[in-house]
Image 1: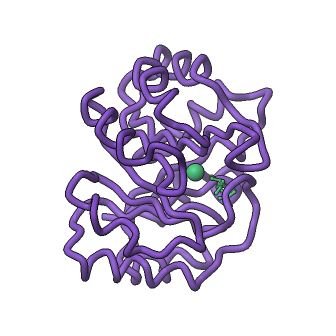
Image 2: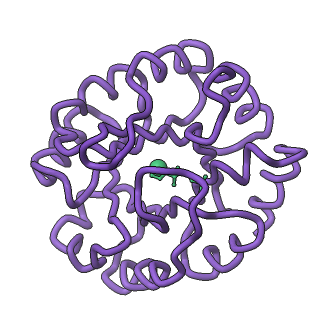
Image 3: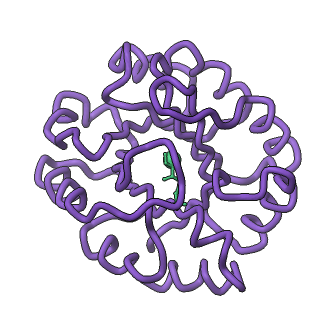
Length: 211
Ligand code: DX5
Ligand code: ZN
């Protein structure tokens, strides 16, 4: 089944509690928590205190934490302690490989993310250490951008390299293009704008699960 991970980056910043409930009541599979440091990407988003508050309120949700940080190793423990289920770090970041080791030691699920311009083969040496690969289908930093279809071929490359974990896509995904992603071998969809604009989030989520 295709999993849905709504991104709170697209939620009303004044209504984070209700965004959390919307995700839960829609029966989404995960909550996508985009962390940005205004250095690795030209935007600044959320910190560990928001994650900890969400985890306290809804401990049973899967917190899919996407660290868009220049040196994610520095904050891996902070986000693990705040309640992350999965922590995904960028292949392009500093200390990428030591960070994968640290995440494994912290007991969270380990993800690696590629910017659109980074080839899939760069992950070949570490695929056996990963539970998940996150393919950015937009340049990271902002929601509401247009999906870059040229990225989708990376999913097939990863399968051909023998990767059997989750392949997640993030950016510019909606009802109009989600079938294309599912057909490409992607099994987790991050949706921010499309999800929080949906008239009926539960029906939206059911449509993703029906892919
Ligand atoms: C980019 C962000 C976005 C966001 C989802 O760094 O990670 O991809 O989560 O974006 P939209 O609103 O396009 O679904
Ligand atoms: Zn993300």
